[in-house]
Image (cartoon, helix red, strand yellow):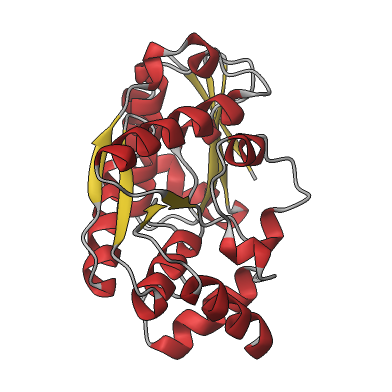
Length: 249
């Protein structure tokens, strides 16, 4: 890990322009932001994209983590419902989505004279089914963590060593990933997902994931909590109005 970290330090020290970062508040982009603040000799601007795909809970994490690092993000808004290729949600949805996100960042970066944009893609992401990686390559977005061979275990270890409180934060993808491919993404089903996740979090259930397929909501939960959850059926039914809901263990 020491060699990988030294390679990353060299990668960042070689940056000779102002730099921007697509910042989601996840562990990977947060680590890269912390490394840029530590080693980059030029101004660093984190860009956070606000859309219906980003939950209010995640927006709070973005603010808290950026405050802890000491670099305030620049918030940009975009609307995924303006692009049919995104909300129709076929197998290339992440490609189109990532392309729109980084095109939005690049447009703003040009206005701010920031010629280099980076992403927090790390080694464990490479080789997996990640259509969004193609969009990064096509737009010439830098991926220093992957380039330097740093994976999730390395990232968490360094964050812990550096003393950041979010080193063990669980990975959190955008709300759209809870919707099965070829099921239309709508404001309605995004709203149901967010409300259900907030509900289970508030009640301290061990929620594994939520999945929407057509008009059905599948709630994956620890089998030990099935009995406790029965008392909340009415509330879950109210949140999921218009959808059938099923529990999976």
